[in-house]
Image 1: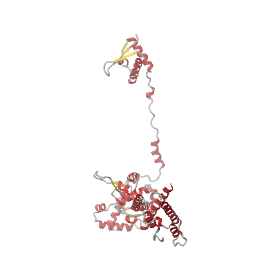
Image 2 (image 1 turned 135 degrees about the horizontal axis):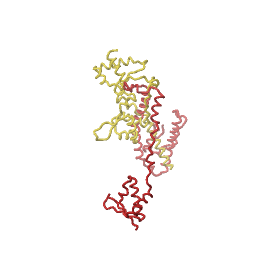
Image 3 (image 1 turned 30 degrees about the vertical axis):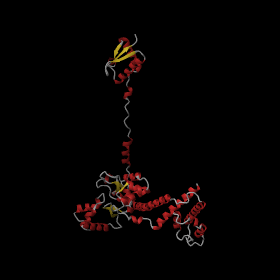
Image 4 (image 1 turned 30 degrees about the horizontal axis):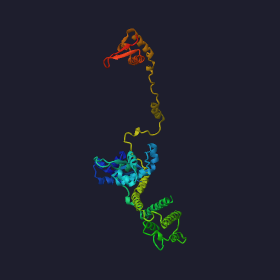
Length: 193
Length: 228
């Protein structure tokens, strides 16, 4: 390994949080291009058969244990609290993640229901945060660094394109048919009554 | 679907019927049913598709029956209902990607719960209990189950003069001097006895045995006996 790779590896080893590229540049005095090469060396060194892996997460770089070693790690240190999110909370989180910054009203309009309690729950869990505003206009929300870490995302916006999740023609057609069917049933029931 | 009046998918026929673009009265219902359910039909059937089709055919038969009988409200298509359905459809289509994105996120969350990070700042790791230590646990719990100090009951042992005794004392003073100063009567009393003496004086007034007079607010009270 080059001297820079050894230094970066040591920094990653002792860092409690993912290390941002800027921080590594400041400490080592090396340009980002050199550090990227060094990170490549570290990634190679920690190949599949080792206990650690290099991960780009939450806007930085971290050395972390491999997923299959979690049971052993949890015998040394308490298992991290799991985020058990309801489908409603997960959908609200998806809306924020894709549309951030987004207001509570915009989320509610899209979801078609009141979202106050769900937004509060996500705020309490630290998965979303309110953006600093000048005081004028409604509050806007965005996802947090904790959200990126929990969901294993490298940076904000590191999500599949929303178009990928859109309904296909036949799916939209099936939805239309279901609505029509529901309407006909409702009409028939009204007629019976 | 192929009948004289219409050729195309069943869904489209239904939409056109609902929009009144195909005349319900001219719809050959028997032919439509025959076309839909005859065994020679090439499509393979599953129970869901068959039951949906039967439901739709029944609904169309019901609609046509109403139209033929000329029931009120059947002449004009319900424009509001159509607009509401289209608005609901648009909303569901717009929201569907976020529902699917939520499923993707849920899967992502499950996958991301395996790796562990160095969360403990260097130097503090030793403070984290490695495994259960009964002695430490007991020491920690001892402080929680330690009995609190017993409450003081000293004030309950203090003997005070009862109200009847204070009444008797006041009566005696009034009988002897006719008029007594409240301040003099309570000069050797504590605050509680002072209050009880005032109650005793008021009791004498209530019984018509004495009168009270206070010349200035917060000044001394003169207690005067009313009996000769």
